[in-house]
Length: 78
Image 1 (cartoon, rainbow, N blue to C red):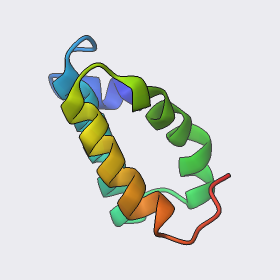
Image 2 (image 1 turned 90 degrees about the vertical axis):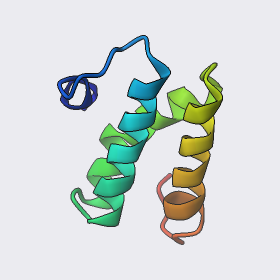
Image 3 (image 1 turned 45 degrees about the horizontal axis):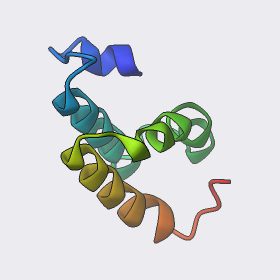
């Protein structure tokens, strides 16, 4: 998944890359592009690794995704 986003001009050391990755995950959840089981297995661990990112925009974008799609969804991702 990271390579998919990286292929769109991202730099793996750049905070904007991680923001784009989180936004792609947001669109995947919003459009139901993956089953919740596949999302929680493949993408959610990567998202949780970003919670301590040094770039504030990454943490803000991640928090918005988690609040909107994970915490308030009522779905058991764990």
